[in-house]
Length: 292
Ligand SMILES: NC(=O)c1ccc[n+]([C@@H]2O[C@H](COP(=O)([O-])OP(=O)(O)OC[C@H]3O[C@@H](n4cnc5c(N)ncnc54)[C@H](OP(=O)(O)O)[C@@H]3O)[C@@H](O)[C@H]2O)c1
Image (tube, protein in one colour):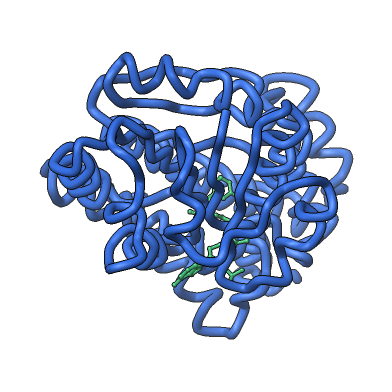
């Protein structure tokens, strides 16, 4: 297929490479042009601007946040003004439920199709094409882009014909991950201050009742204090928990734990830790315990 890809950050670069490897004709755009270099060397075409990346059957966006997505969708040279009728905007970024609703309506008015396809998995998984994709949108649009979702992920879960549902599922998942990082950090601080070896403790957890990937991945990062370079940076984690809280407000669902997580991430930002991975959240309990 003829595909545009906008946003070549930690996640987008790997996803775009896998579309290319699967034989799709790829046109790429990134605000910072230098990030497109490797993909161009592998056969992708560099777009002049956003509009130039919208000439195919579909265009992906994999951008930091709502503001970034709005900046490429709206305006004279934006996606909305240049994607042809019937073509699909595949939104893989973690964005708000509200923006997803707005994009659904605006693309429908422009006779274009919109699929929300946020992803689970860190940059290493994006590079290998092993992401889990949560997709939502009208059935024929999802069917049309199925080969593209297969190229970037190991499995696609279609959750609804309303795109915003996929964004809500993604946000709920990141809320759960942040909860695990915080609680794991607290448990590790407790046992370590009591004289138990942290590595041994983590091995015990992950080979018994806590064998899920998420405990292994984040447990390793916390025990090894490997917070740089960031795979998923603190500002993005903070953005996501704020979006979780906004979704809770809208649906009138109290999320007391999410409020705590928002403050924990704010703590990291207040101390200038923008460049750290959000797993650094798991190091705060040891600091609170005077044991770091
Ligand atoms: N990292 C993860 O583990 C992970 C996993 C699942 C989902 N996600 C989600 O995936 C999205 C991308 O994450 P990432 O880790 O790839 O982020 P990233 O490495 O920080 O990349 C962000 C991308 O957005 C672009 N961008 C930011 N602000 C912009 C603006 N105002 N206008 C135009 N472009 C802008 C950046 O362009 P420049 O290169 O010019 O800065 C870059 O292409 C986020 O929504 C994130 O929450 C991340």
